[in-house]
Image 1 (tube, chains in turn green, brown):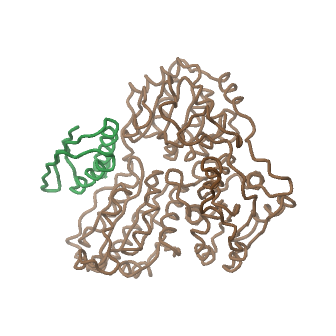
Image 2 (tube, rainbow over the protein chains, first blue to last red):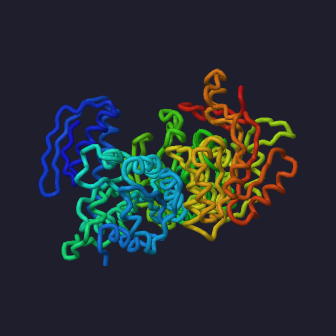
Image 3 (cartoon, one colour):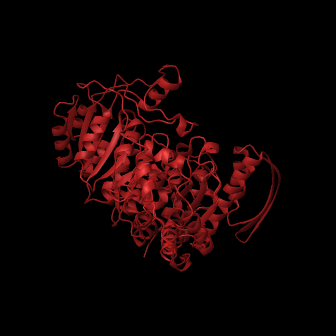
Length: 72
Length: 559
C-alpha cells in the first residue's frame, strides 16, 4: 500500500509510522519534506490486508482532522 | 487587553464563553493560576488531575459545550491522559491546557518535564505546543473550534511557563481566524439518502441502532424518524436517552449486557439502520457473524467508521441531525412505510431482565437500582462508573435525554463516574445529579469528596458495594474456573464513615427492609450525599453475550 499525503503537521509522519508498527505493518519507504507549514510525505507499507485497511482508515482520520483544523 | 501570556489564556477562555475549568495547580502552570486569581473564569480545584479530565468530560457530555481542564507539566499532564483518551473514544469535546517547563529547559530532563505533545498525540484529535505568547489567543481559538468540529474530541494545548509569563507585544499578536462553529462536516449526499430510503422501503424487518452521534443535537430528529416509521430501535450505551420517554418500540441497550429483545431483533433484522454508532466489539461480539445477510445502512460523520468493523451497503456521510432530517424528508416525499407489526414482534423477543436469585433478606444490587430508578426524578442526570453497576444501570435507566446520562463507554475508565458527576453539576446546576459507582471505582477517586465538600456540590453518590471488583469477578467465575485473583475487596473501608469524615451526608443500606424509605431520603437530601448500599457479593450481570460470541450464545444465568 502506498500513500501520497500533504500534511499540515510534520509530526503526523511520526504518528503514521507508529500506527503502522501498532497494526503489524512494515513501513518499507518514507520520503518527506517540509516547507512553509506543509509537509509532503510518501509512504509504502507491507502487511496483512486487514491491517493495511485499518492503517489506511486511521491515516484518513489524521488527514481529516488536519483538514478540519485548517477549516477551523 | 492581555498583558502577558497567562492573561491571554484567560481572555481566550472568556471569549469562548467558558464559565468553569477543572484543574490542579503546580509549578509550570503557576502563571496561569495567578491570572485566574482575579478573572471571571471559575476554577474548580479537584484533588487529582485525572478527576479534572473526567469532570471536564462530565461537563461536556451533559451540556454539549467544550469541557476544559488544566494541569501542570510532567505528572500533572500525564495524569490527564486517561481522561483525554476517554474523551477521544466517546467523542467528547474537551480542551486541556497544560503548563510546560521553561523553554530553555525543554530537552534537559528538567524537573517535572515530560514531552506531553508526544505522549498525547494518540489520545487527542490534535495537540499544540505554544512557543510564543503572541500565538496563544489564536491557538486556543483553533483548539476550541477543532474540539467541536466534525466528530468532537479532545485537544491539548501545552504552554511553557516562560511563554505564560511573557509580556505581550500587542502589535505582534497572531490574529485569530473567524471561529468556524458550524463546521460540522459534510452534508450527506442526496443519492445516498435516496438509496437508503429505497432500501428501508423494501425491508421487512428493519431495526435502527442509535449511537453516541445522537448527542450532536440529533435527538428530536431521531425520535421523529423512528416514530414516523414505527421502527423498532435499540441504543448503544452512549445513546441511552435517545428514545422518547415511553416509546414502546424502543428495545433498550444492545450488546454484551444489552437487553435480549434488542440483541435478538438486531439478529433477525433484514436491515440495520446504524446511526452515529461505530459497531464496537461490545456491540457486535463476533463481527463476522453479526448482521450476516443483512442490509446495513451506516450513517456517521467520521468516514473512517465505514467498513471498519461491519461492511455497509449504503453509507451516509455527514452530521447526524441533517442526515436524519434528510431521511425523514425523503420518506415524506413518497411512500412512508410502517413497521408496527414487526416492532410488536421485536418487543416480544425479550422479556423480564434475568437476575440471580438473591435471598429475599439480602440486599441485591439490581433491587437497589430498580428502586432508585423508580424514585429518581425524571429529569435527573445520572453518571456511572465502570463495571457491573454500570451495566445494571444501563439496562434499567430511561434517561429523558442522552445528555442526562454519562458513562465511560468506549474506554471503560474506572474512577470516571464520580468526578464526571461533579462536572455535570457545575454544567447544569439546576438539575439533580446522581453518580452510581462501585466500590472499586469509587476508591479510585475518593479524594473528590473534598471537592464536593468545598463547593457544596449537590451530587448524590449511590455506592453499590459488593466487596468485589464485580465484573472481573464475574468473568473469573464464568471463564477462569472460579480462580478469584485480586478481585476480593472484603476489607473495604467503612465508606459511610469516610463520607462523614468529609462532611458529607451519608446513608447506609444493608437490607431490603426499609430500602425505599432510605432511597427517598437520599434522593431528597440537601447538598452532597452518599448512600452506601452493602450488596450481595456475587450477584452477576445478566443477560450476557460472552466476548467474541454471538446472540446465539446469550446467557441468562450461570449454566
